[in-house]
Length: 99
Image (cartoon, rainbow, N blue to C red; front, side, top):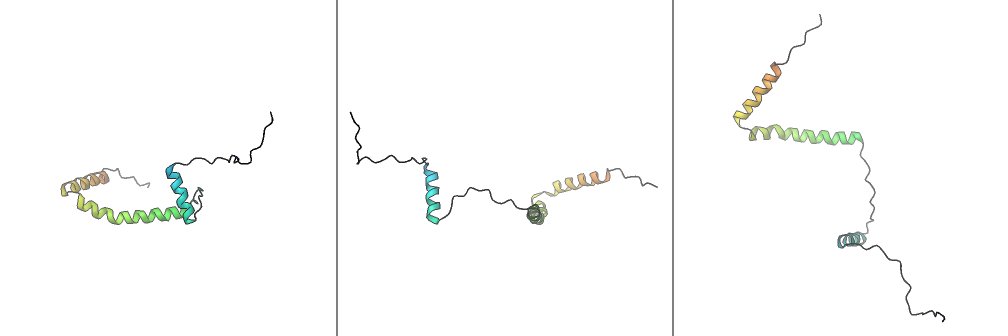
């Protein structure tokens, strides 16, 4: 028996990986807006930039912190904290001067 070639049979195509619904939706949105699907790491900021950002965040929190604490703490609790701080300051031994 000889094999005959059937011209009406479509050749098999390479299969593409199956995507779930979320992945397919993401791919569709990225294609529609013309974006590329680059999963590269973003550039790391320099240490000086990080330092500047953290300093600004600290200043912002510092401005709010004392005022908010004043409002939220009771007078009795504030007094307790002040006494503890005073005891901590005065309980330290003074250094002897090298004379």
